[in-house]
Image (cartoon, rainbow, N blue to C red; front, side):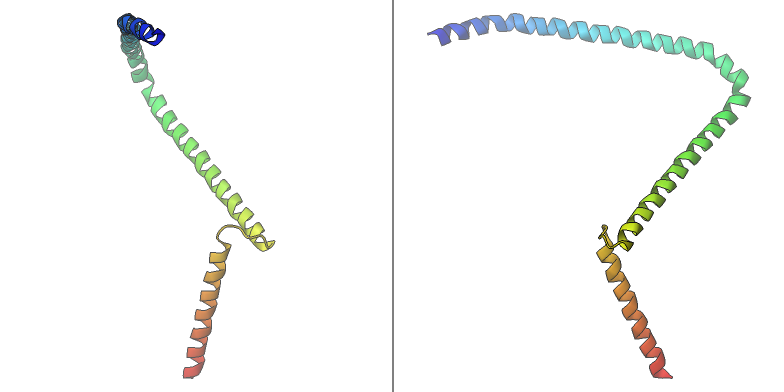
Length: 129
């Protein structure tokens, strides 16, 4: 009987609970819409103020931006090549000290294949003479 009473209380509370959810959603959505409008207005005003400055300083800013982009690309490329070199050196050290780095078995298989082809070619060339 207590479960029945609880069910009735829950059904009576659901409409008010849904109304609270709707009011909260409308408040949150409305405030986000207002903030979105303010952001758009500030962006338009900022662009209107900055456009003359960009036009005046563009002969300096465009080459400076291109130079900064090239410098950043150079540093990133240099860092990438350095990291790759360190990885290769680390792999070679592990391989030469007898540890089995990933791919060492494939390297050994390739070495065996090349050696077999060299022997086969040597036998063919010395056999024909």
